[in-house]
Length: 448
Image (cartoon, rainbow, N blue to C red; front, side, top):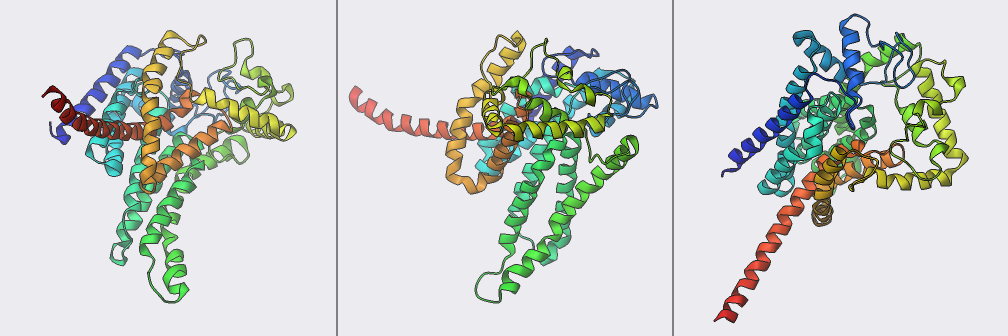
């Protein structure tokens, strides 16, 4: 089968699987494993449609009082639901189906483009197929949460970054180059609006593209340092500034909204403080637990003197408390961060998980893990080509090991891991065929 037809078949399977899960989830909004946040997004979208803005309908997680403003959840994803609900009514199934269609097409397509660019057609197709059928991705593809669009935006930003890094900046093509940087800023901005955590990785990605393009534009040979290096470097800084400017323009309206709603500066969302406080609370000792038991609700850990604060004030105060935990006992923080490795890379069944979660975990990460490890090793031979993906995996993992680690938070890394796994499968297949080719003549000689 031709590669194009194979890719189309993979995309069809990807869409069918996600649409099937969307129908199974239907119009019900239930606290299913790993996707409890869809209850909040469904509620917020209805509040916006009813003219109440981004406020909660009743006392809501984490400790926002009924009728008060919230910035805890992604504005962009809430607006996606608002748009779908405005057309079809507050029917979660409609939002699930549209989302399943969008990510069902884009996700394997982007995985294919990444794999093909880095290691050829076969690797691209294997990466696409694996992404299409990866149980975690199929499940989350129909959930009313940020993950599907967020991970799609991450893959798109990585693919565009690799494309741009391979191109020279010619004087005649500066307009086209500026346009690509603006597009990169748009994609990065979308990812940030879906999950503000991605802001931490933005400088690494932008810096990678800028350095790659700068190296191509530097004038070789003798000459004045200013003409060969300093001037091109200064001129090329304009392009990253375009991307950063686009990101800033996308964030700015929500910063203004937050200033009006909370009477204080909040860049985007009010969840970093809560997460860092809970993740490093002394209740864990030196051993992190992904989800605390029911008899230790997260709200109960928040000091009583902070509970009367607004959501934004509480988030800021809790960030301060979290940093105090770190400074009071740095050794415990190091031990706690190391213990988060198990929670983040968990691939084995657990008695604390549902049957569904255990099966999905094993069929997803456990099956892929050997090929991921092998792919990470063999790709290191061509590390210059793969460095951006290594960088993403390393930075994104470090963020969560230093804060809050859950399997759900690893899913963006899984999307990139599968490209490595696909390369590992293809490389292992080539080596196996060569080994078989060497053994066959020997077997024929023995038979004769």
